[in-house]
Image (cartoon, rainbow, N blue to C red; front, side, top):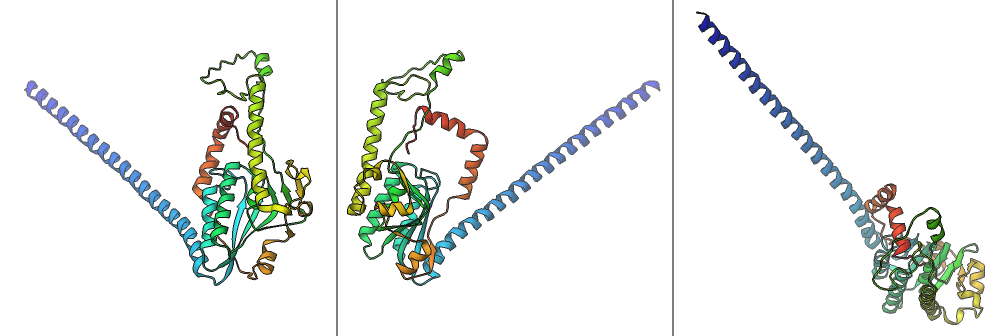
Length: 328
């Protein structure tokens, strides 16, 4: 009798354990399924929100260009050149040139105003924009392009402005800086003072030219100066080619000096006082001004801000100082 009771108790115990295991497994599967469902729900809604956001951004750009071509009759086309000129920067040659082409290609634009607020930047990007303006002027002789300097058109920005048929300025605009520079630092003595040994290995005797952690090499300095002089000559030739006999013979013009708007007119670097509004009214005789500038990508700008926040810019600047020297 006792043995039967024991067997019965063992049977009940194993049955109870089995039921608990089944219930536990079912509960675990249920919770996992709920977790997966929440994840996919979040993913789907996030993806939908992203599509809507990108759609709004894209529609804004498309509708802007559609309005340019269909919402007006004759108008003055406007291109904004603002900020530093560099690849993927405030002013990228590829994007700005597309804006300029759109302005020239519109059958309803009577002329193009290039509004400039820039301290300059890459000589290569500046030259690419300069060349494209000259090309478009040649194939559109009846559609003038005029540069209007507001706060500043210095260095590469003035390089670009000189491609326009005329340059208008404000009395207090900053104009000029026809020169080239390289920024860098040298601190080999500091390395010795704090007990750090520089271990630099190169293949190619000029590979470490202007390395900030080493003593400056006179030969490297001479080579760099020749390179800057060559780029400066290209700059001078471009400005002289378009400004011609309007330029003063005063050597200060090509010294890298900047001038006020009034002084720049006196030196032949610009032509007259004026603004976007006054040029549209008095030169093109059409007060309707339509902006053809293709805006920078919001997502790219956001990415740049995040990159900067995490210190990537510091790393890039260190790399630039050693290998890829920025020229202005």
